[in-house]
Amino acid sequence: MFKKCMILTSFLLLAGCSQAVSENDVTHWKMTHVSDASHLWHKTALEFSERVKEKTDGKVQIEVFPNSQLGNEVDSINSIKFGATDLTITGETLEVWTPNAILLAVPYAFEDEEHMRNVIEGDIGQTIENDIKEDVGLTPLFYMERAPRNLTSNTPISNPEDLRGFSMRVPNVPLFLDTWSEAGAKPQVINLNEVFTGLQQGVIAGQENPNDLIYSNGFYEVQDYLNVTEHVRSWIYVVVGNEQLESLPEDQRLAVEEAALEAQDYARDLQEAEQEALSDLLKERGMTFNEDVDQQAFREAMLPALEENLGDEQYELYLEMVEQGSGIEVDR
Image (tube, rainbow, N blue to C red):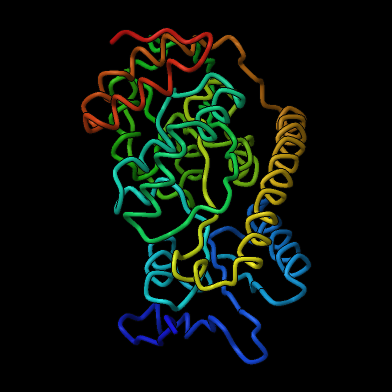
């Protein structure tokens, strides 16, 4: 039996020992993630859990722990590798173990959702999934799309020239810092819970985030414009430990995989419905959507930073991703 309680780090103490296969041949899995209970990731995790239980006649049961209850994202990945938990939701953080995972959140790789889906479900997506399985010891079961990141401000920003002298917050992601700096802005790292105050007090003039975080953090109260830059379209995986999945009888493993595909469709429908509702809510709260954004100009301005930050293999894959779009021009 591959499961062993290993008291190696504090997060394992918190997580406890996951039951791989318990009495009566029922497999109990623990699934943890960083989002709160109202987020679509958690709703999808619960839906997936119910479908797995139904399709395996109760032989595989998944208990879901939201809101970082069992540790942060890196802790969760490590705890699966050590057998303390079994599943989590993760994305570009996997770059720590496998370099190609950075491609899950690279600026201006996709022109729209269809373009991104074609890449994820094509050869490049399969390469990334194989790398995760081989390098990290985790099997991606299904993916969930993330809402595009947009730039907010108090004056409309339509092209890189408008960024001159523009101070803005970015998360602690070196690639984001370098790309926005290359485009002409003055980015700085600030914790998300401090951004509202920073905007209110004029410490920063803007920030970038998906619309759901723009709304949930109340940025519409201190920002007039939502500039539709859509500079990052990304996705995230629900992953399970290789050993955990391989320990299941074949019929149960196939049932889990079938439930995963259904959960993927469920997440997509939920995402589309929520994004449409969020746009309406932000407009109702007074934000003006600036649709007159030259995304190609932003892409070209950020390209040198991408070339500098990505390894040779990752940069070539990035260019391949971009070229699969019908309306994107890229110089090699």
